Length: 381
Image (cartoon, rainbow, N blue to C red; front, side, top):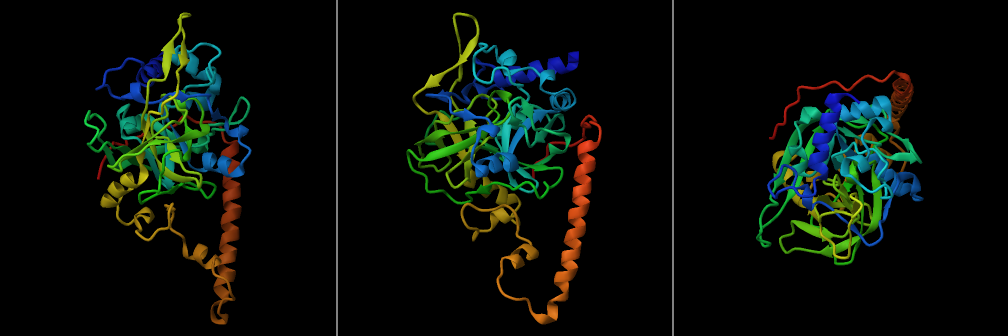
C-alpha cells in the first residue's frame, strides 16, 4: 500500500469511523447507526431467496474512494485496510476482517441515477470517488467486484439536507440524486420506488442493504418501523447498520424502496481491552428519509423522468417501458400488414445479443487498468 493511499484511507476512516465527532463535522456520522438485539446482517451468498439476491445484485451500490477502488481491483481484498484495523474493533467482532473500502451506500433508481444521502457527498469531490455494483461476497472470501462494475459519479441532479434542527417539529431531510456516467446494462434493474407517501405502520417489517463499516454489502431483514412523523419527511427504524450505511436503501416486503438511511445512534463502544465492540440496543434510532420526498425535489428539476409520472403504479419503476417491451405484453396476433417489422426487429435483437456476449467476454479477459481521474465537477441544477 502506497503512502498516499494509506493517508487517504486514514482520512476516510477518520470521517467514517470517528466516535466523538462534533455535531457540525463534515459527515455527522457519529449519529449514523447501531445494531439492535441480535445482529441480523447476512452475506449475499447466505440469502436463499433469488429475489433478495437479485435486489442486492441489481440495485445496491457502494461509494468508494477512487484510489481505494483501484487498489481493491488490482490487489484484491488484502490490499485494503480491514474494518477492524480502521475502527479498532476487537478481533471477534462480526466482519472485522473484511475490507473497509466503502464510505457510504446508495441505491439505483433509474438506469443512470443513484439515490443516496446528501451528507455522503461532502466527504470528497465527485472526481475522487466512484460508484460500484457487486461489492459483495459471491461466496465465502470471494468478492464479486470487477472493473466493469464501477461507474463514475457524473453530476448531482437534486439534493437537500435539513438534519441539524433540534426542533422535532421542523422537517428533516437528507438525500441526493447522482447521475452516473453511463446507463447500466440489461442485467441491472433499478429498484422500484414509492413516489407517493407509502402506507407505513409501526411494527412493519423492513429490509436494508448497506456497506456498514465500509465492508461488502450486507442484507438485513430483522428491522422494523418504530416511529412515524406527521411531517412525512422520515421514519425511524431499528435496522442493523453501521457507519458507512448512510444512503443505503430501506425496503418494504414488496421490495419497494421506502427511503434511504440518513442518521442513527452511536454504534461502537470501547472495552477494557482497548478495542471496540458494536453496541446492541433495544430502541430503534435509525432515520430514513422517505423516498417520495426526495423524488418530489427531483421532479421539480427533471420533470420528464419516469419516476415523475403521477399515474405510475406504486412502487414505481424508474425505467420507461419501450414500445417493444410494451408490445410483448399485448396478447393477440399482429396485423398482417405489419408482420414484416417483427422479422426485422428479431434479427436486430439477435445481433445485439451476439455483440453484447462478445463484449462481455472481452471485458472479462482484459487486463486491469486503473480507473482514470476525471474532471467532473459537482454541479446542481
